[in-house]
Image (tube, rainbow, N blue to C red; front, side, top):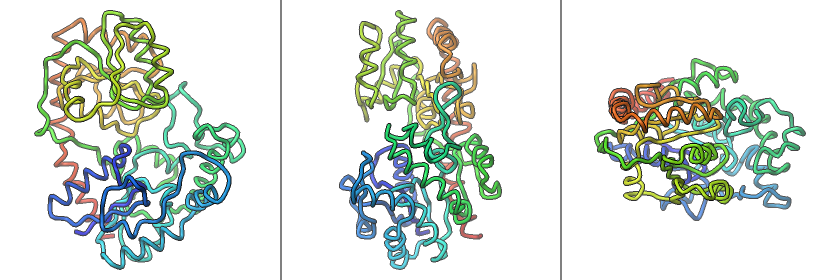
Length: 404
């Protein structure tokens, strides 16, 4: 097949881009032609198709002026993106389009082009933006839910980028697209990474007949499990409020005999350093990747995922388990579809510090239990989350969309 992969960015920026790029690589290796479509960006990977990409818009900071007006117009509906995609389709004749995160930088305007050009589409639902102005939805007690917020209340709340203007634009674009029912009408199949996400879309009014659950997978054959450890709890991720890293700082203060290593960087970095000042058992490792990150995983006794938002389906959970590492994760979103209490780790409510402490003590002070959970983690991956099975089902869903 010739498969169009549409995403706002065409470089490794976040989870959606990682999945899009890895899927593109797999498809190419298996004889399919992959055609990218994204916004122009100096960080984009090199591709001859970049001449078809719509112009860059800047969204880092909200403001006034021509640039802001262009960004707001692009968020609502982009004639440029429609025109560029139409040219790309005319020159390449794709069999199917796989949509990822197209909000703002591309806009759902391209869905009209796909329908006009008779290109079937599937969309992986990477976050909550189809049913909320927010990309993330806070877990109970962790933050405010703005799914049904009005324009002015949303603006005054500054929920997006701590800006009234950016928040107003976010709510306005969301409400406009929901009014048009543009996603519901023009996407042929929605691929939900978890049953949780499917249920959220059903509650949000999306037609259930278009929803399919497709869990992510990992290639266990390429991951060598390590059942030995060096006695520390590991966090890997962005140092931002929604990831709940403050919970780990609190745990370090409560459990001075346990070593905690935090890998990553982000907007809360300085604040977390201040909060952890004086904790000799807390180590901020900074950003790591490749072999350095691999070694940190190998030495971990347990991996912590204390998210305070409803994660759609945290891929890091699968990666940790594939390496034979039990996971203690927040009982949010799609996490309970991976982590099983006493089998491959433990689930804890995000703000339950006692529950986090108890789960950690069980693992660190009972080596037999730790080994049982470690082997259970690896077995979970081999049994339920095969990457080959994921891609086999993905191709079936491409075919299903084409048959509609």
